[in-house]
Length: 204
Figure 1 (cartoon, helix red, strand yellow):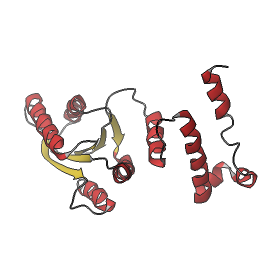
Figure 2 (spheres, rainbow, N blue to C red; figure 1 turned 45 degrees about the vertical axis):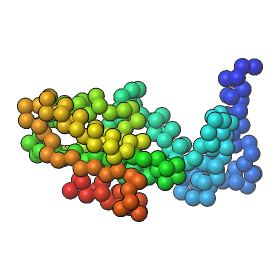
Figure 3 (tube, helix red, strand yellow; figure 1 turned 90 degrees about the vertical axis):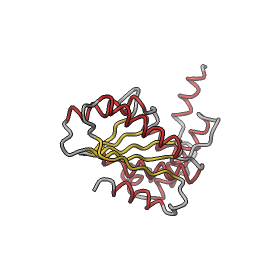
Figure 4 (cartoon, rainbow, N blue to C red; figure 1 turned 60 degrees about the vertical axis):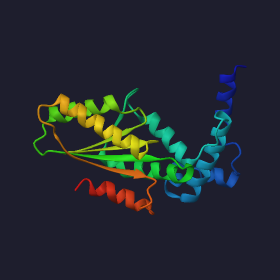
């Protein structure tokens, strides 16, 4: 039997170690409404994932990241996301940062109210030329917010200069009014809510 067949057989047995009483309760309604059953299901999924991915014990945050990657419709390039997903993705990044000591930065790009749809799309294209596939772009009306994992303040400042230079060279009159930044970890930030509040403030 090939390794792929072995894995397929293992997948079909993923729930085999659940206690009978718990297994009986594993309905869609229960696992989406009862925290203890949801936690039990996630625990068993993570145990199973460790057999498939033995080089690193996965966390719930890792599993969320994998699910987001599976749901992404774009096969390459920077991911564009609607603004309604911003708080959730920032919260995930904060969890990874606190757990693993990861740095990240955020940029809020404020645009002139006269910015046309074609200018907006052209600006997105300019950004995508300078961003990595791990970066996220959240789009709002007259606002663009970037979430940049694993980037420190020095590299954030460098990125801002490069983007502004490219925009100045690409547009007759730049649509960018202002660029605000937040880098994490930051001695002035002691609560996750401060990062989320900062992001929300940039939309006002």
